[in-house]
Image (spheres, protein in one colour):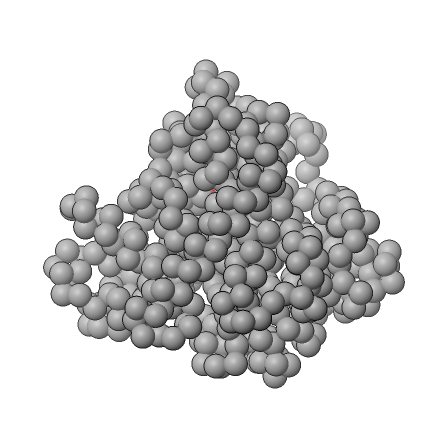
Length: 447
Ligand code: GLU
């Protein structure tokens, strides 16, 4: 890391001492781009600062009325991180843990993830510290409407295009889009993605994030002279992303043997690979209890309360739940058990220390979420493309385009690693490829 980059980090630490998630993400990324940032003109143009700070951040209160007539106030945010290569684009998260640090970290990650897709989308993130668990549909609707009242003037098809994330699915996007349409008087379908199929949404939406990760993984295995056939996979979570991983892995001959929730993890040696199991997971998630134990009871699998799935010996680990769920101790267990591939699906599930430890291990091939976790946003960009030509693509067409883009993301990351003599270090390769893309756009557009 050169002096200029080290100074950028110090300045950020001084400016944002209470934003650990954001600082952590930026610091790790700067470490990874290493040699690619070593160009004297970058210091002259202060390019690195301009690439790691958001262009704009909105914070707004969202008051709403519950079913008993009580008024509550939550905190809403939207970070418009980078418009260097297209309109701001990224999810909305409704979760009690949302705060300025989390949305800035998500916006930062989204910017570099989106750049790597090769599609013309900038980066953004947002959400609120609203907890949808235990709320009625009417309460969720009122919250979404009021959230959109605060946000609608700052978004739009060519400005900023929100989508879902944790706690925001098709139902919430429907309410948000309905209110946007009412407020603006425009049926501007690509102002939001993740819409329902009847009003501009796309096929493969629910499975896209999980499918994308497995397509990426399949390409990685192919390029390593290996295949998915007969492999065992430990996955975390039990929502759409995890379910998508289970489905696509099963289709390609591998089996997912673990699922997890805040209550613990399930070990199912037969694999989560039948339609009955997929349907059960969908019902479990919709039930809103946030517990995975009922799966173990239903299918006679083992349940380990309060523990994480990373202790199970498998060929491949795919974290699909939330940030920092894999710490150094978990990473050490994966390495001791001889895991060969570590592929992130959700946003930044591993702590920086866990990443540093795993990267030192030559026997492990790994990829961070900005590369292998981009299935969701790739599908969003396809939804925008479909909306702009007033068309509806078929399931096969969407899957074909999603797969082709995931393969491209892998290849670009591998090429960037090779270009800097980093062997098959895909973690650094994907950081460098996305850095180069945005740096070029910023240089071309001037200060
Ligand atoms: N939150 C999702 C992601 O992490 C979706 C972003 C989008 O589709 O805009 O990529």
